[in-house]
Amino acid sequence: MPEVIMMPTLTPLLAELVLALGALGLLMFGVFAGERSAPTVTGVSIGLLGLAVLLVLFAGGDGTTFNGAFIQDSFARFMKVLTLIASGFAIAMSVGYARLAGFQRFEYPILIVLATLGMLLMISANDLISLYLGLELQSLAIYVLAAIHRDSIRSTEAGLKYFVLGALSSGMLLYGSSLVYGFTGHTNFIEIANVLADGRSTGLVIGLVFVMAGLAFKISAVPFHMWTPDVYEGAPTPVTAFLAAAPKLAAMALTIRVVTEAFAPISMDWQQIVAFVSIASMVLGAFAAIGQRNIKRLMAYSSIGHMGYALVGLAAGTELGVQSVIVYLVIYVPMTLGAFACILSMRRQEHMVEDIESLAGLSRTQPMTAFMLGAIMFSLAGIPPLAGFFAKYYVFLAAIEANLYWLAVIGVVMSVVGAFYYLRIVKLMYFDEAEASFERMPGELKAVLVLSGAFVVAFLVFASPIINAAGTAAASLF
Image (tube, rainbow, N blue to C red; front, side, top):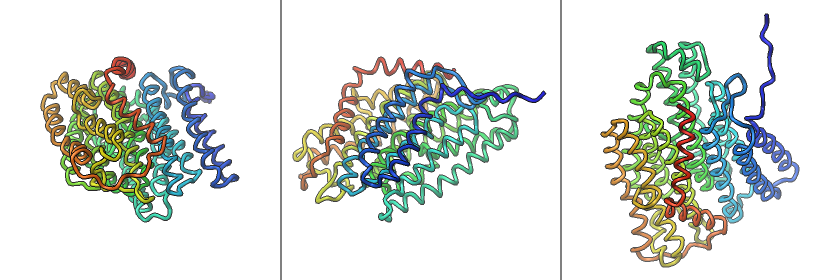
């Protein structure tokens, strides 16, 4: 008797449907209204992301749909809300830049909405096919975003580099997925885990390695980080701010789900891979950033290092480890967005300035900006009692609880090395001679910088609910 094809329930997909339909509607509106529609499209896009947050939190309920390919649980909800908030702030941060740089294009916020839609699908992926669908939707939108400055050679080069290397990583991910499917006969994560529980084969482990390689590219983990410095430097700065935050969240969430669900029975294998990638990322992020003079390239290596620290928690392979990674990501996002809010405000004579030396004497010309950026830099360095210290504390604690003492020690040593280039920026701002003042900071950037600075300084006030929510999210995976 033939199987009956049932219409899948769309309730868990409400947020994704709103973003998809909203993006298509805005695209049509922009096409007919022209470039003058950019401010309206930007405002509505932020509203769409806000509505999606409400739908994720209060509508739909937990469960699976599309034959288990899409899952909604506490982990997915938490990471989706964080991703949507990061994307919303990234769009808001671009408003002043678009106005001052003549960059008002209605496609820009729509592409961010489409990329965010792909990220939500990635976070809820419970199947190798839905994983790839979400990953490619996100990637294709970001390829265009990186090259959206059509008149800039740097932007075009950044988009092309990201596209070529991204296509390579997608091929590796697909090859790994085909091996996993070939040796298990399933694409669903739960079914793959059931087959692995009966024993693993060499082909399956090779498939795991290729899947992990494809995912490592998306989080800029060594040795698949090579695109990051060039793309961060060449892409328009608002795009770089977006790239440094939201896509990292979604890719890390997807990596966590893949290893804790699909490959849970062979945890010893993937823990070794994650530990190696973590160490390589921490070491390269710490040492490569020291010689950088361009602040966007410095933030690229900083991002690589921070993903390495986050992977320390995942290498533990425990519920506490996943909880620590989630807490790390919650703290990483405001630190990164706050730093980029300051970078976006580095304008002199109607031109962006990206040289680190340009921050010299900022405490005398713009004391509030210098104070907030200083707090964020101290936090990125992991200095107590700021938020960044607690982010590293929790991942190192998870590693120690899992008897990975050596990994925690390497992490602490690399934190000390990495502190050098963050503290160098603070030294420039407070102890060097002032250069010409920057132009007045737009209101939206000032708001992001103040909120980020307040968060990292007063993290202890918010710590308890964040840690509890992260614990609930992590528990849903185990």
